[in-house]
Amino acid sequence: MSGTGGPPAAPAMPTPAPTLILAQSDVSGWLNLDGTEDPDQVTAAIETATDAVIDELGWDPRQQVYTEIRDSVGSTTLVVANQLITGVSAINLMYPGQPPVPFDIQGVTWDAKAPIIYNLCRFPRGRQLVQVIYTAGYPTLPNPILQATRYTIKAMLDGSGVDFNATGESYSGVLSQTFWQQGPATCPPSAVRLLRFYRRTI
Image (cartoon, rainbow, N blue to C red):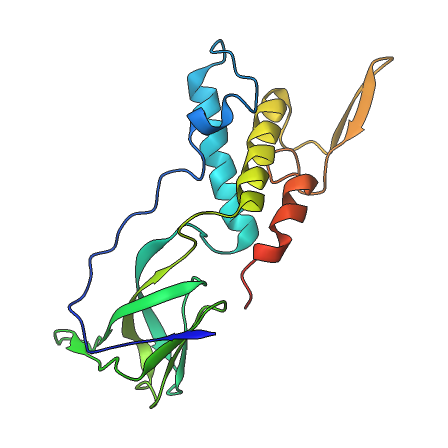
């Protein structure tokens, strides 16, 4: 499935992504937070979990407008950083020492799943030449991504008293556990399993 472009449009200003995939209010009940926790520690866990989930996916799934300058090999395709493209608002050619040159996007289409933009004719060849302004990401994040973020936040909080460089811990007569391969400060296996179908495709 793909979308189509239209007449050249004025460059759009990038819109910042939400700061977090989930706010504290979204996870307090699920994590049974009672208000006695250190708020800075909870915020840090949510922020770190957001970064960990995005890193595991290989792209930011939150819908936003991106402005990127890409290399072009002179083909009819252009690979961008983010997938699930829903629109291309402008493409400009960035020649050194010159103002941006608008590129006709009438023949531009995009892949509905892969981070690829197509054109009927070849994009000019050059390094850091093609500026593309496009919208990508989910308008509403799928539940598996949200749940994976909750699992990761919980792992961050549960591991707050653990040496993040450790591979396991043992308390004589109490417990012994081995951490997942990446360590306690990363997405736990339960989150990784939920995210595997949403990873960057190329």
